[in-house]
Image 1: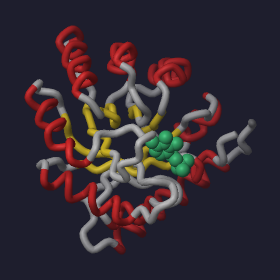
Image 2: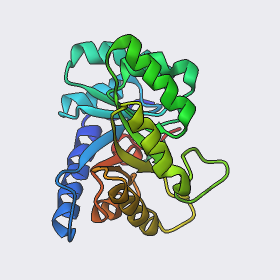
Image 3: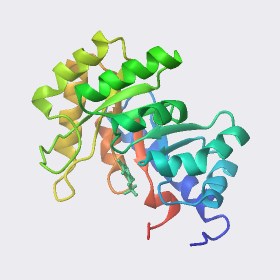
Image 4: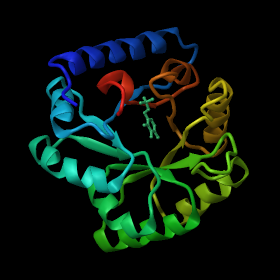
Amino acid sequence: MTIPENLISTNLAAILARIQTARKAAFKPAPYTHLVAVSKTVDEAGIRQALDAGQRLFGENRVQEAEKKFPVLKSDYPDLELHLIGPLQTNKVKEAMALFSCIETLDRQKLADALALGRDKSGACPKLFVQVNTGEEPQKAGVMPADTAALVAYAQNLNLPVTGLMCIPPADQEPAPHFGFLAKLARDNGLDQLSMGMSGDFEMAIRFGATHVRVGTAIFGARI
Ligand SMILES: *Cc1c(COP(=O)(O)O)cnc(C)c1O
């Protein structure tokens, strides 16, 4: 799909404006709200349009897809930052640690062990968010709410840089209670960062203190 010239920069400007408006309207917004432009399925030309418009933070949900698109873009734009927002298999940890500045989907001890091992070998570790399955959906990734504190403690005991929580509310439910719940869980665990909110609900997430909103289709158009 070819994306019409200027559409992405127009969309980006509109989303950034909506983020600022939502922050102003929020009773107690987070100190900042970063826009993670979700570029899964978007080709390199589309991502370059966003880069030309000044966007530097992107999210991808598959390591393999990101590995195809981003090494060149990262060398052209050294300040580009990439977040992993999809599930991570332990056999892809090494590649993920090299490519992503933040992995938002830590959801089990085995993955924490693999990240600690990778950190020991490479000397560096991306920032980490623990993904919480706030809707307790059986098919969905993420740690169960009741097991979140234990996983955060486990990762922190390995000296892994856990800085926040992430959630994807069930598609068929009001997102607000999930955002409020994630915010409380983060406070209870002494974590400052909250990745929540997508194209359809990022303004609501900002009301509940989102530091990172993950927006794809509202910037790049519908995925086909
Ligand atoms: C695809 C995706 C998004 C972006 O969703 P949109 O509705 O296109 O904004 C956000 N978060 C995750 C984890 C995703 O996989």
